Amino acid sequence: MDHPDNFLNIIFHKASSLGDDLGLCAGFEENGEMISFADHVMKWLPEFALNHSELNEIGRHNAMRMTKKSSANCLQYDEIWLTR
Image (cartoon, rainbow, N blue to C red; front, top):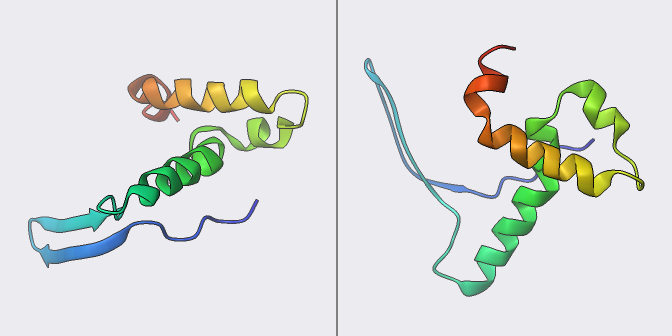
């Protein structure tokens, strides 16, 4: 699977000994950008939220189910990602 194009623009970045401060912008001041951002998230959500074997299982017969599973995985972040 390809990697997504950068969607968010860095508008502020400051590194210090306490960590990094980072400000990002998705360009929501333009109405069409909200739709583009939603398309971007839905396109790359499975790659972010599914493991390698689940990604390899995606096909025409189960694409909707696997997208729903990836959404559910994001909602259960603490249970899934902290145990990997």
